[in-house]
Image 1 (spheres, rainbow, N blue to C red):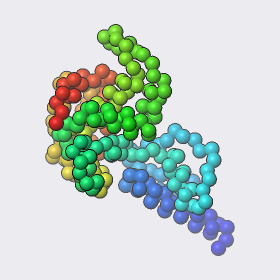
Image 2 (cartoon, rainbow, N blue to C red):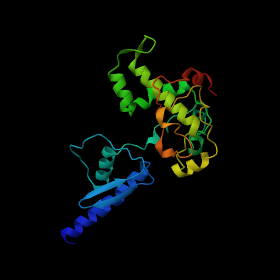
Image 3 (spheres, one colour):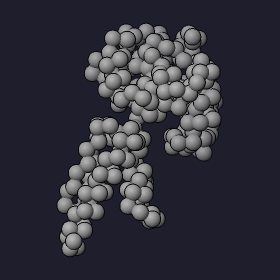
Length: 234
């Protein structure tokens, strides 16, 4: 095999490895193409990392591709809350089907906050930045509040409301399968809490929503209905 043949073989093998890595990372719809001397990756709701690669150390081609994808691509948005467990789930065997949370479920706000502080902060740069730069801010009522506490509240509210409207898929199902399961199970708009405000974008969890989009952020930073939602746990 000449040098050009070797180059083509390496490119083809790297593309195959990239497809496999993207699939394992949760991007079921990933498309990998060779464009000139580059390999380009396409996927719906792809989240690119802001990290820069200065040096890589890998002893084989597979590890090299794994490292490049890990540095370049963030986990899919829908995976954000996949390691959260309700109290009931924590008491069940760790089977994939036991990890589903169906729409209409009001998960514990306290449980979410505990998960955020103990687990989620380890891989959420927004929470990490809030904790590192924590300072006292003045809110609308003229009271002082911790920036980190505000970030925890914001995340808990966002995830709780997302789970209520579209649930949380189990690992053994694809995004498309979960979309089909919940299509007729979604609660009506505005039923999670009183005075819900979605801003100019409108209600995001309607018929056009795909689970691959993950949790949609609230347009209201002061979480209208927070107390009401937090009190109506099951």
